Amino acid sequence: MKNSRKHIILFFVLSTFLLPMGCADFLDRQPLDQRSRETYFTSETEIQTVLNSTYRRLRSTVIGGFVSGNGTGSSLDFEALTDNGWTDSGFMNLQNFGTGTNTSSSNNGASNTMWEQCWQGVSDCNFFLDNLERPEVKALVSDATYRRFRGEALFNRSLYYHLLLEHFGNLPWVDRWVTAEMPFLEMPRLPKSQIVDNILRDLTEAIEGLPLPVAGYTNGRVIQSSAIMLKVRILMANHRFQEAITAAELLINNPSNPHRIVDSFSGIFFGEQTNNREIIFSVQYNGAIDRHSYDFVTGTRQSCYPLGSLAVAFGTQADGSPDPRLRFTMFVPGDPWLMNTLKNPDGTPLLGTAGTITFPYPYDLGTFTFTNGQFPARLLHDNGAGGLQGLRIVADGEVKAWSLGWRKGIDPANNDFRQSVSLQDRVMMRYADLLLLYAEAKVEIGGGTTTDPAALAAFNAVRTRSSVNMPAVAEITREIVRNERRVELAYEGIRLYDILRWNIGHEVIPTKVIDGTVVGGKATSLSMTTIPARANVAGSNGITAVPQVWRGNLWPIPQNVMNIMEHWEQNP
Image 1 (tube, rainbow, N blue to C red):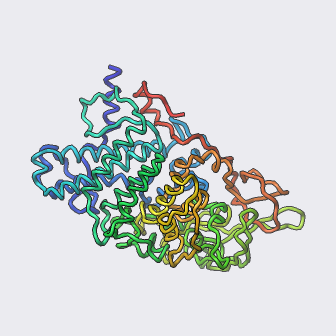
Image 2 (cartoon, one colour; image 1 turned 180 degrees about the vertical axis):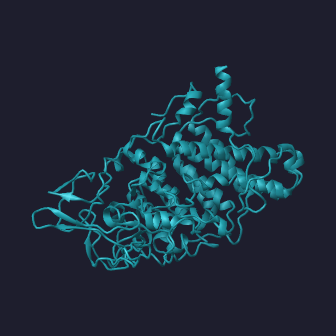
Image 3 (cartoon, rainbow, N blue to C red; image 1 turned 45 degrees about the vertical axis):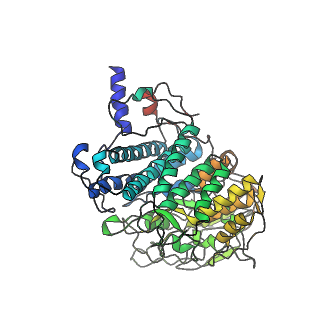
């Protein structure tokens, strides 16, 4: 009886939502009427409806989704798990991951949700793929359509599996739709390398079957370049650098490659997303019923925010001016900021305070001026008695440590910051990422440095786009390419996976500086390191931060699963 009960529980863990949601319109996610497996796949339209369901888990806020309503976070807030940012929110228990207090049974919202959502995504894909192979179903579509449909589902399953591998390591391989007859209790956790080989095989098939439209990525559906990008990511994650180079060149050297580095960096994330040639894959939002709360959660609430160490990583242009991507990526004092919701008691706008702010050593970004209507800053200054006194200006919550806020993708004209009013697409893959991975692979093949012309062309194409205009380099080192990825791809949900690939979490996370408060030449309890005192420094937001801990590259498997799979060993 005990094993039977476990069998039933695990069946539901792995096969939740046996009938997918969706309808003929790719953007309409209303649930289907319940129909049996045998009677539903009766037309190409119905086949496509079920295929659409394989995309739905991408909208999870741990994978690629933006929150709807008056929410507390988005998938981009995983930046708080890196050395780029931090959060004051309880969203997905990210603080517990940052401070090392997450466990398999509690304080692990991100871990439980990632496990659940990815496995449900795998189940959705397996349901579709199994039915697509039924002769009577396969006969309903042309060979090209069959290969395209199969390629989309294989891509989605590979993406879900890739995330599971990166976070949980060794896994069972489930490539069939779950039925009660499957021997769940005996499933072993196979070596990660074996699962990777299976995924790469699937992506090779997907690449062969998916189209590469002349217009590039346009309608939210997977295309050939999406599958190439995912294959490169997986190869890089597993240090298969020469294979990654070969895979990337399938697109880079293709005369029909529709992708390019676009002129406008900021337009990729807001304002110029439609048919953008740089975007390779995104979660798209369209229409009145499809709105989300990104502007409110990120631009106004600001519960997740960037750290000063990221800001100074951007460097300068040839004339000494800051890298323009700094202000495309984050608000700094002096930037126009229309999201200030502060009001006087009579409802009139609360005037800001004019002044200057100087960022503290070693995060010296220079001195910025700010006036009413600009991004609010908080100052700490010499109080005349050897201490510091503060002037705090609040946004919807508070302007956080370092007086920086995420700006990437924010609608600069959006003054309605509550509930679901935003329509930005969540960019999950873009050509700049592929080019930088290609350059990185060349660096690793070269032992840590390269002057390979193809690598330089790819790397410098990213740095020298017209809206950025950073100086080209003549040699790429490991340090240079890693820093370039950090600044180019900040707040895009990528930094965590770079940290995992480079195995540097144990180095960069414990030295992460949450707050800039300095007293007497030593960091207070609000800071993670010791830095020299300075007269004018960015202030504290009044919270007490605790030291950051990197508990290892793997997350714990949810305890309810471990209770069933007694022969599995928990991740350390």
